[in-house]
Length: 385
Ligand SMILES: [Mg+2]
Image (cartoon, rainbow, N blue to C red; front, side, top):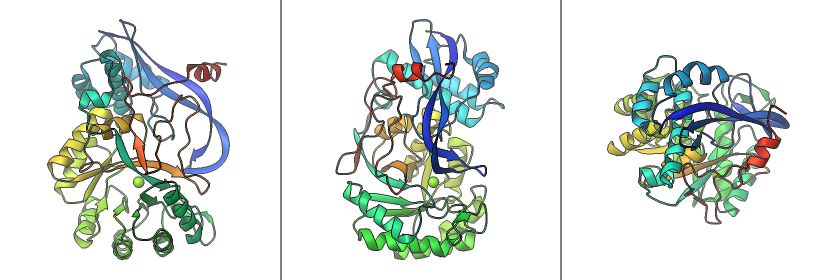
């Protein structure tokens, strides 16, 4: 089998989530956006797609990247040589890490379709369902707003809930406050209100998305430990490895990360060896399914857990091929106050992450990534119309 063409499938969708100019996403009025995924075609008629579903977090290649980087390297290659192609892409000095991930996911989708089985079956399936946690959008309002939302999520079946509190947002003025200072006292008030509202039998986590300094991280970590929180995720800028090492030494509550540090399995191995994290973190933006599997296996061999960042079809396949002792949860979000479930992308026939009343997400088992695309929607919303 040979790769004969690679292109982008682009179409319009409506979404109320947008990236802010300083780099994190927020909810607002619904607007029309362009969604794209990579399509890899072979000489025997098979196609593989990199589609990951909502949200707009996953890396999307540009047409220039497809033409200038991907096609020169991959056209004519055997798409089943995933490890060899991953090594070529990840050693290439101009291949962004997210682009490696995007192409690798499409290659796995193709391989699964070729074999007639899901990616997780090809990796070796470990389970068909996984515990979900509700992951809030940031800046939802007062402690009471978060508390009421957490109760709604608990009633919907979730056994775990992760707070994104005040991120680049001043809760006193209710205005954007990008960068520093952060608002750790107000964040802890939100955490306390959530714990009070849901009782002690719900697992709770806090993700400040890197807005604290070391002193604030230590203070918040000790406060939420008192509240029985499970972990403190990504509290500081993730270029700061030595402060993370100090934080882990200072706190009893586990620190989870790095979420956004570039370098995939290689950098995450260094963080683990530095004892700069207690629970690992990654997603398919950091080297695709091949890169995430290497990362997860590295953490497992060190006796560490790895919490997979965000949902989507590629991450779901990794979770289905990994035991709960290593990867415990599926992240479901981001959820606003009026949402307890994630939105299903309009171009998918089925949601990627259906959850039952006990808080378990069914992991996909169809061929490849297990995504059922609605080609009628895609063709009728083409950007070329
Ligand atoms: Mg996070």
